[in-house]
Image 1 (cartoon, rainbow, N blue to C red):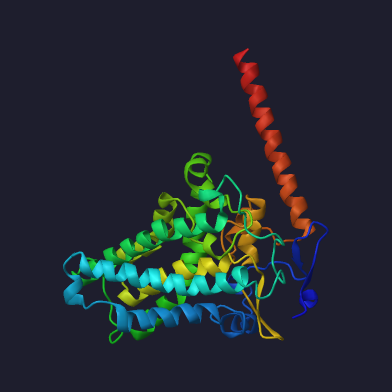
Image 2: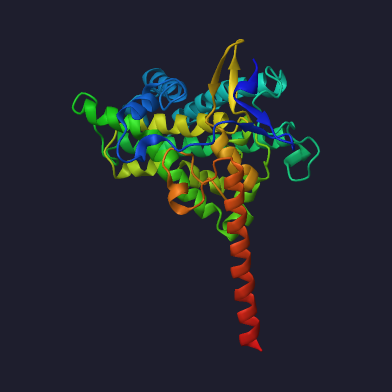
Length: 345
């Protein structure tokens, strides 16, 4: 596959697509029906291929792997353990297959790879000085248990009537819309705001820094977080103690939150399929956050970064705006310190 039709490598070796990063056209005004239809239904859009893939796994999970409501009424050791095993297996297969293709077999080399370097293998910032082992460890010792704990809490609550339940037989359209909106809620609104909290200096120093050690992320980076950050990250499902829903919605949200970070931290702008086809990873928006740190706090579905002045589209103009913001902040900090010294004197 010739990647030159999509972009080039700059003089420092970073992949630079010809097209700048764009927000999803959901909040464009006036509404543009053709653009919306192409985004929601088209190839490399909202549903295809990734959200449809996650939704299919969630439906299978609900139909064939989820214990009965009678069994889930009682918190025993057995059924939560089953869910933990299922979750571990699903994550290992999906993210593991991506890692195997891109990083072990290096099936497309560095084509479309944001940073041409491969993960660190002798870096003291990581457990065992190895980025992949570090990421794998945090993913399965922290990420999957926290995912499963939230899932167990909600399923147990539905089984006992502690969470407002709506059946598909009674309200199919409402639940279909809710199901459709899960990525926008979780990846559009919830992620942005909890991410801003995690960048508060104290939270960053003690919690979020662990994730940001991955300047050059890979598939296992997605869930490589401090346990406290995991609690924030998966807390989006708590909204269903207020919003009437169905257990399938909760399962889909957990699947989406657990599998999409592997794609979104793949380190590649596109995945090559065969000799002519590629599929986007929607990875570049968040990769720029890992590279530049103080931009693109969201995931691009909702233009919150644009609204709050932290949007970076990968262009030189965006670099300039970001640098100007850094300089202005440094000036304000210096001015504040000068006034404090003057007052103290």
